[in-house]
Image (cartoon, rainbow, N blue to C red; front, side):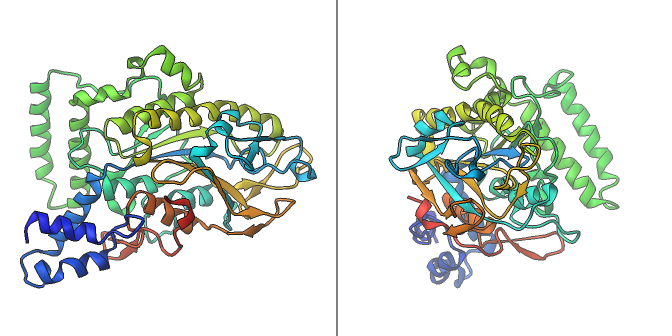
Length: 433
């Protein structure tokens, strides 16, 4: 089978959402190649992966650690006691209102979509954070990979000199990384987006550095037969680090190369710097960037704290959408804004809201998301989903579909156990163009 024929078979396996389904893919190539024994299964999966990578998709996750209140973000309830003092404001889309804390996102509403009917059963920070990062609950038996690791595994360019998955300003609540996919897909962590990453330049001249690596490789070879997994992981880490720190592409991490006007457009917060860095990284070929905003666990003084946090997040979120659009990158870059759950409709004695996974919201933009719409709703009091409930697995299937990934694909653990990227759930089709 020629490369042209193989390319045609891959394209024929794409549904209207451009997701490659393995069953359709095999049906298209079986007679021409697989049945004839001219192509191996590895060849076919490599071709499918290469097709996805050529599409150049990327994802930016804006993670609101602690669980943002839906009432003070994108699902206000003005006029009801549960809505508290938060007012709603109109947006650029007639009929859609969001909390007054997000005036810049209100202007960008025609390019964003809101899910107001997210629902889960997990109200514990560690478990819910893990669930919203992996699509699975934590178990002792399987180390599930995070969404960033999965996306990097499926569609990242292996030839890229930069990490395929970068995490900015996270505080460690999310312990998930590459999981059973391996250390190659662990995130590269950055705590201060305004500064270049620490320890990313060789401490000696390149020739001497390479000689040291050669010596390390020969020393490791002595232990490889006794501990092949550990030696292999260690070698991968060094190879990845070496490729990165010797690459001219490392300038993508340097915000000083941006104009003062652009840095001002993203705002003065660390989160704003993180969003600007995310745009630079995606522009330079990084596939997945997670930027965290911390402090959304508003058990006390919810209204003031939510307003302060929103002031740090609103402008960068809206500017990221605009910046990507101006650069022709929005259609291939999915932005997901979310936290691990929402907050209680009832306001507690400390003026705060407690954990509430039963009904919360998520916002999405770019990456084939049809903006200017709201999916689902809750009752008048905000206590229960009354229309179009969306589960975590539904959300993950939708994210995969937007990124042209088959959420039902199985990857295998080191022990050979098949694990689906997403176990169940349905794509929220109305979100996709």
